[in-house]
Image (cartoon, rainbow, N blue to C red):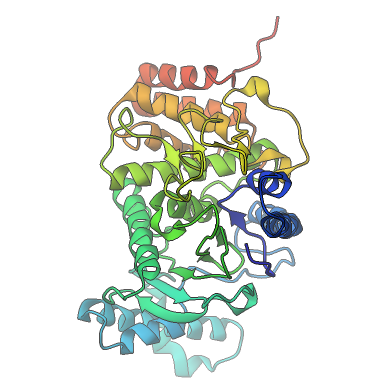
Length: 431
């Protein structure tokens, strides 16, 4: 676990697991010290993450200073230029990149004219063409970089290794990051007609080989990219776990649907949504129905010899691992065990197990593939505009029940209400 500087990030490996490693006398001192360093760095980013989601609940298009926010959904010129000029990229992708490069330059010209930076008459034809199109590309571009074991986030993304349309490289981590990002993108496009992670074909950038023996993976919203460590003593293979990648990229989707404050119950729901969509993506790749899937998050991240099956279990929260070097999985599966805490932003990783179990309950009760009914309900919930930034479990549950009724009638609403009731998330009754 490498020490590094970083922005506000979401880690796949939760802080309570790092804390258990740091406190276990079964671990050697260097391992415990490394875990403590990772915990310290995690705590330092809490303020920025909270600021990020606070900003997302302000009127769209403006930042805290009231200025027009940077439009991050357009692929940067330099990446498009690289793809357009690259001879080992397939011709279709190369042609698309050339087209989109021309388009983005038209958008920039329009912006400059709006700011009084260009002569109107000289750009009139360009602007007329731009007005007829949207400020988005028509294709999502993936790019994978090699961080070359550099532990400074300021130096990301690193060395460009593979871009959209290029053939596989000799680096397995690069290929896994590229292919699994593709699985996530195809899931959102095919199942929910959602283009990339922002519905505007936002490019997906990943960096592999981050840090030295770094045992984590994360999505950094400030630099808008995925970052993967190689793992070491206990955890590894982050690029090979499509549910991990689905989880992290879904945090970006949440930013563009219903931003949930990363604290307390709303933060736990933020984590839960990433787990729910991450597990659906995994089940789709493996062609598993709800009743025959394992419902394990990060099952391929644990090194051989660790007493456990995954980082989390949605089917049975609290049972993912029990190892003297890790401690026992602390996730509760029922709201009766919910307690206010200052740790981990109010327990966002800990208490996500409660709505996770509810989603599992609903998916199995509906039968078939999880994304066909339960997933569709959760998706419509996130897009509904009815999820407040500081959403509680009960509020979220109520919206899912309403959406279930709209989509699948009274029987669907009954299934979803029972799924939440069974984990103790129920409406209050008054005499």
